[in-house]
Image 1 (spheres, one colour):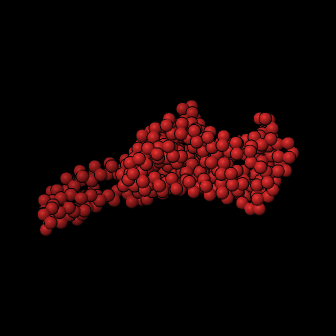
Image 2 (cartoon, one colour; image 1 turned 60 degrees about the vertical axis):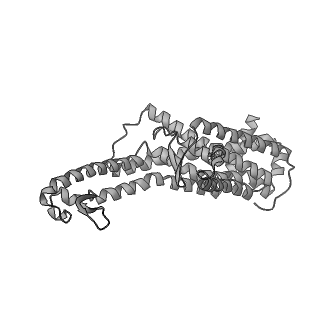
Image 3 (cartoon, helix red, strand yellow; image 1 turned 180 degrees about the vertical axis):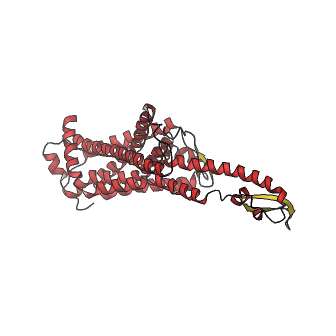
Length: 354
């Protein structure tokens, strides 16, 4: 069975690589993943170009009409250069040293913030950030590609012909799913590779350090992060396949997977901190557990239990192991159901559309 499924998967790849859709979706995923590099890079350049033009406020004891101390703004760059004209009204030149001390503290905070921004777009931290961005968009792209791959034979009317040539139903569907799983892994590998190249370029332009991080520990964590992002796509491969088979339609598989993705995000944003019982239910939903699973990226440092803002308050994600078990349960259940339906569903002629 495995050998037959492998032959079918190779034939499916032969057909797929000649279509425009996979390459367009790949390009979209790669472009969006680069937001994790070039977004922080341009923010860094803007911060740096602004230089030490920091502004602070200090009170001089004056009381305003509202009974509160009046606060003044002043330009730290001028203060540090000794320009007394930058002092707020009513400030004596003898207070210059106090203002300088305040500005030195702010300048230190500014430099720390600048270095943190640089860290976000340089290696190795940029890789998990890019994988997370690519993973979010790839859920939609994988749903589109999986639905097209599984449902196209229904629309084209070629399913009966393929099965009549001796391909078993289980082997046929296994080949489709194996090809999609391999494609998803290839996508994450290309995102990581593209991020390494772009981060190296951005880091060199920003004067960042070299490749001291490149060691066996880095390669191990890189592999784990790619694998983590890959696993997060499996449930939506299974979901898209199941719906495409149930409806005998490419469009239905896309609509169901993408519709569920956005419906859960919207429902969580509205109900998570409003309805008490919804949090328990949300802990077993797909997108929430994908987000929790992605918190454990190794290259960016363990982030399990990170507090994320949802709506007007903060809500804690489920644990990493909870998320993995939920994702595995969804993947297995949806895949088994897809095979069961496909085995028992009559094979009709052309569906006449998507």
